[in-house]
Image (cartoon, rainbow, N blue to C red; front, side, top):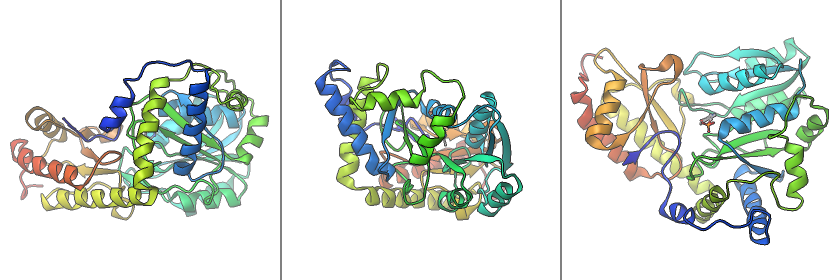
Length: 364
Ligand SMILES: *Cc1c(COP(=O)(O)O)cnc(C)c1O
C-alpha cells in the first residue's frame, strides 16, 4: 500500500525489523545505554544542547506535557492558530485553566509575526506563546524563526508544536531561541506512533519551578531526575525506542541538511504534479509546506469520493480535510520515508483516479 498521509508514515524495513526484537529490562544496563544514546541522537535533530525527553504517548501528550509543566492556573497565554492543530494547542491550555487569548488566522494563511508582536504588546501579562511550526491540517508552514524572535525579545516563553516538522523541516531550537519543542515518532521520524519527544530550555526549566498546573504522568521534573540514571519514571514503549534508533541510523547516514533538501524536492514534485493535473493548491503558496500538500476540491471533484477510489482501485491512501475543511480538500503527505519516485507514483494514480471521481478540468 502507498500510505501518503501525514502520519503515521511508512516505516523503513530496518525499522520494522528492529521492532521484532525481544523485550529487555527497562531499568537494566542495556536499556540505559540505549536511552542515553537515543536522547543524544535526538539533540541533533532538535538542533539543541537542551536535554531531550522521550514520553510514551502520541504527539498530543507531548503538547499537554509542555503546558502543564510551564504554566499555572490563570496564566495568560497567547495561542497562535491557523488550523486544527493550533486550535488543539489552545484547547489544551484552556482545559487546564490558563487564560488563553487566541490569535486566529484564516485557515490556509500563515501566522503573521507582526500580529503576534501587536498582541504581545497589547497584553503585557502574556507569559507564553503557543505556536505550530507546520500546520498539518492546512499544509502551511509558519515562519517560526520570526514568530519566536518576536516572542523571545518580549521575554515570553516560546512553545512550539513541531510534531509534523521536526526531522523533515529546518527547526533550529537553540539558534531561534525556542524554549519548548515537541515532536512525535510517527511522522518525520519514520517510526510507529507511540512516542513523543520534548526539549526544554533553561528558561523553560525556570518556568517549571513556578508552574502550578496539576500533573503526574507528564511531570517533566520526574523525567529529569530519572534521566540522570538514564531511565524514564515509568515503563517506556521499549519497542518504540528500538524503532526510533533504527530510523535515526538512516537519518544520520543521510544527514539533516540532505533530509531537508529531499523533502523540498519531493514537495516540488507533489505541487507541480497537482497543478499539472488542473487541480488547485489550497492555501498561501508563499508558505506551502514541504511535508504535506493540501489540494482543493471543486464543483466537479468531491475529495471524499476521490480518496475512496484511490484506496480501493489504486492502493493509495491520502488524507482528507479536518474539521471545517472536511470534504473540501484532500492532503498528500510527503514526509519521512519518501522520495521523488514515490511522489511521481502518487501523481500518476491521481491522474487515473480523477476522471473516475468525476473531475472535469474545464468545470472547476
Ligand atoms: C500529528 C500532529 C499532532 C498530534 O498528533 P498525535 O500524535 O495524533 O497526537 C499535533 N500537531 C501537529 C501539527 C500534527 O501534525
